[in-house]
Amino acid sequence: MAKLTKKVLAERRRYLRLATPIDITYTIPASGKVYISTAKNVSADGLRFETHDKLLKPADTVELKLEISGVANPVHCKGTVVWKKKLSLEDGTPFDVGVELSEIEDDNKNTFLKFLCDSIYNMPKEAKHAKR
Image 1 (cartoon, rainbow, N blue to C red):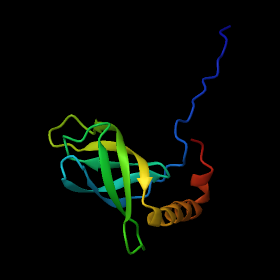
Image 2 (image 1 turned 180 degrees about the vertical axis):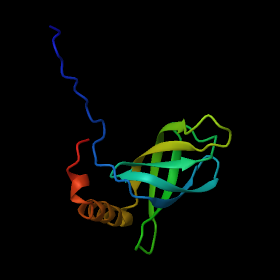
Image 3 (image 1 turned 180 degrees about the horizontal axis):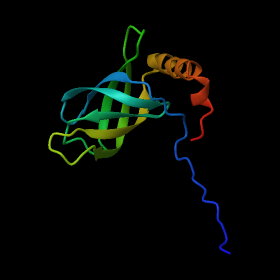
C-alpha cells in the first residue's frame, strides 16, 4: 500500500489581499511618463494592476496615487515593481504588474489603513472565513 504524504502549501503573503478595485495613477520617475490604471487587488504592502506599458520592468520604482472612494485627496505612495507578466500571447494584450509598496506619505497612512480596515470589516462573512 502506498504511503500518503500531506503536501503543505505555505502562504507567501503577509497581509490579506483585497479584490477591491481602486483607480490609480502611476509615474515612472526615470521617464516622467504618467499612466492611468485600476488596481485589481490591494493589501497593506502591495497591489496588482494592468498596464500596456512595455517598458515597465521588475525593480523599477513607481510613484502612485490611489483614488480611494469617498476620500477627497488621493493617497500618495511609492513602490517597486516585483513582477510583470503578459495576460495573453496576443498582440496588444496588457500586462499584470505586482508592486510592493515601500513608502506612503505620512499624511496618507491613516487614510490608506482606514480604507483597508473598512474593506475587511465590510467583507461578506463567507469571504473572511474561506479556505485559502
